[in-house]
Amino acid sequence: MQSLNFGPVRVYLGEKSGKYPDGNQVLVQGADTRVAFDTPRVSHHIGPDLDEVDLIILGHVHEDHTVALGRLRHVAVQAHEADLAAAQSWDGLARHYGYPPPVLDALRPMIERDFDYQPRPDATGYAHGADWDLGGGVRVRAHHLPGHTAGHCALVVESEGIAFIGDIDLTGFGPYYGDASSDLRQFQHSLRAVRDLDARMWITSHHRGVITERGAFLQALERFAARIDERDERLLGYLREGPHTLDRLAARRLLYPVDYELPFVEFAERRSIQMHLDELIRAGQVARVDPDEYAIAD
Image (cartoon, rainbow, N blue to C red; front, side, top):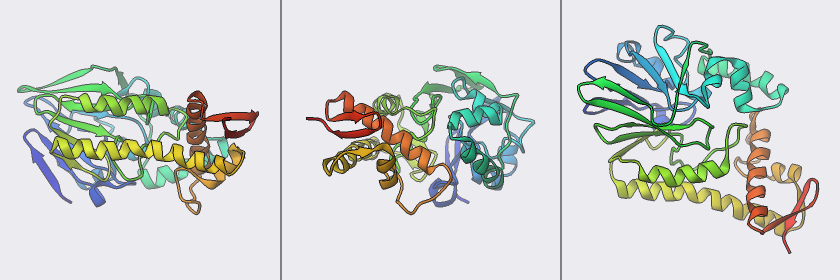
């Protein structure tokens, strides 16, 4: 397991630089307090450096970011207030996902097995602009960047200019906004806002790991954001062949390969496609021709 040190910040890289289902673990040590940003699967292999933290700050709540919360019950947990219910109970997480009951019934044992999922009813909330003084001049501030989830935040170690940007993860897959708590328009706004964080280093939850040059960060961010436009073009290509129902569009897939099957994929496809269609209708490029059929606008 590789770790990287940047002053008070230590990054433990997950498998394949934190590629899902793993992630990258960030620890920040002040003179008085040590905090962890999220707890991905790599957290199982860290030991006392993680186990002795004073606080876990969740940048957002998904199963792959909460792996050690059950094991570290002695450690306080905070999440943005819009994601808090998802950290506190299964019912809250189920609403966060928004999947139909049969999907949730299949998903829960999977995430309990693969991510050691356990709720933390004692978790407390924070808001945009929350700051934590860790002592010795080390400070962390939360910047609300919703879209991936309603409460998704960047956590910025202001004293070092290091931004943990979570699942604005700059992967080739592109932005994910397939849950009930996701929002495409908010994600697009957050992709603009993340550029303006006062940072000289960026850490992603997945795949990219650590980026230390602003030019490289901006190029990666541009490619990541471009995936949204590419998805628009793919949908328009389908509709140029003729009118499509949402069911037919979802079967052709926008996010995942046709042969990729997990319980939540159909829901994620339908929700993501619907948000793209709503934006394309707003832009005058697509028309709804009956309650569940879409076509290129005249």
